Image: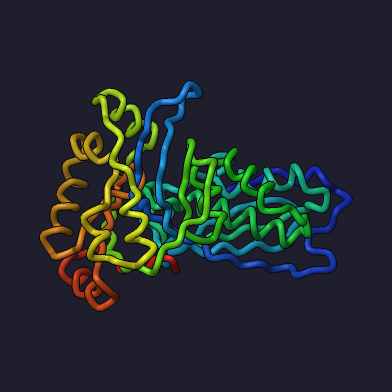
Length: 302
C-alpha cells in the first residue's frame, strides 16, 4: 500500500547529499502505565497525566532519498488493512512537516513495516510519525534540535512528542508536555483486538459519564522506578476504562482474563482496545502468553 505525497517545495536541495542515503528507525509501541484524566480543556482537548512507556514491540521505518515524498506500508494484512493512506497517514504528515521547515529537504521514499496493531491504543501511527521525523532530520541534514522536533510532533498528534523522547516520560497537558521518568525494565503480556476505539469517543464518554480523575500517581511512579513489579501491579489505572468497558465488554473481559491468568495487574492502554498485563519477569510473561491465546510478550523500556 502506497500513500502518495507532494513533491518537495525545495527543488534546489538534494536529499542525502554528502550523507547517508538510507536511514532506519525502530518505531516502538507504547503503554500507558497510568492515564489520569484531570478534566476538559477550553480548546476541546482534555488535561491529562500519564506515564508513557515505550516497549520492545516496534514497527520499522526506513527512509531513502527519492524525487518525491511517498509512504509505503508493508506487513501482515491484519496490520496494514486499516492504515490510513494519503494525507491521513501520520508518517506522511510528519514528512511534510519536516520538509516545510528544512531548507535542505528534498524527496524521500518512506517504508513502514508494521508490527504494531493499528488503532489499538499502542501509539503505532504516532510512533511511525516520530520515527519519520527523526529519520528525515538525519537524511536531509536538517539539524533540527529536539525541542523543534517535539513541537512539530505535537502538531501531528498528542502521543508523538512522548514517542520522540526515546524513553519513558511523564506526559502532561494534552500530551504536548513531557518530562523524563525513570522506569526499570518491566515485562508485559499484551492482548489486542481487530478493532480500535477512537480517542475522541473515549474522552466524550468520560465526559458523558461524569468520570473522575484517578489517584495521585506518586506511589506508582516510585514502584516503576524501582522495578518493583509486585507493588506496581495493584497501582495500574486508566480513567478511560469505565466508559470504554461499558461500551466494549470484550475489552473488559480481556482484562479479567489477564488477571485470572495470574498477572500482577492489568491496564488498558490509551483509549483501547489493547490491554496489558504486568508479569513478574520474562519467564512469567512467556508462561502467561501461552495461557492467553493471541497475546504477545513485550518489555519496556526496550
